[in-house]
Image (cartoon, rainbow, N blue to C red; front, side):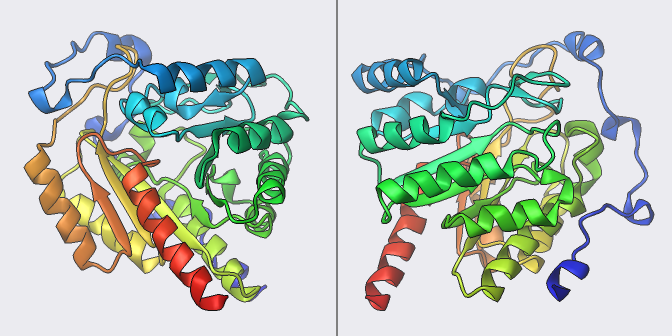
Length: 334
């Protein structure tokens, strides 16, 4: 299809900016020598707990399922689980990539996929009685399709059990594989999410070398264009972490890039260092600064922007907004 021939999924060397020392990869040993800075008051996090948290954690262990809430040390895990929501992580708990911000385990060849996982995830979601579910996964570059078929099978099973359930898929870039993107869109999901994570000049420092700014943007546009070509409505969504050395001007450029690729929803949150082996925090952006950035992004035409220190890509306020839009649209069709 023509839309795919136009897709710039491979990052062009000519467009890569010069890389100063601050934009180059930082080894775990060097990172460990950089002491952690004191967190401001607005980032104080309570340890997870409560009846709902315990119940969901027990169900996940029983079904041998993983959530990004736990694996990525999300600071909102108690709040989200208390409201009965969770982001399920497919394909196991071991990633083939080694992004310098991420707490998820890595290996060149992770354990094989569990063929029963799509059914277990769908059953667990049904047991929780959710109305909006977020699925994500580790990167599985060891698989020919990057795990897209496994992802799609899970979405189809969820929709089979409850066709009205809204499904958001926070997917890898699949290394720009257009067939993998099509597979995800064809599964019947409602929101196609993929995170660019940071500004263009910091991609090499923050993300695994197999990732790329333009590759990520290209996959988001490909998903939207393909959905439109087959007559399916689809929202696209992305997220940026703050505190890795970016400037406000560079963030605004990233916002403009996302809008030029027709991304509908944006989330902005503070990067928190998972361990001393990970990238240090360069700056803690204040709630007031997040508010200013959020308004700036909204002025560029995003359908919805969630911006705050504790906001993450799977953020329930944004999910409730999208759920409302989809439900209103469905009501008009009916």
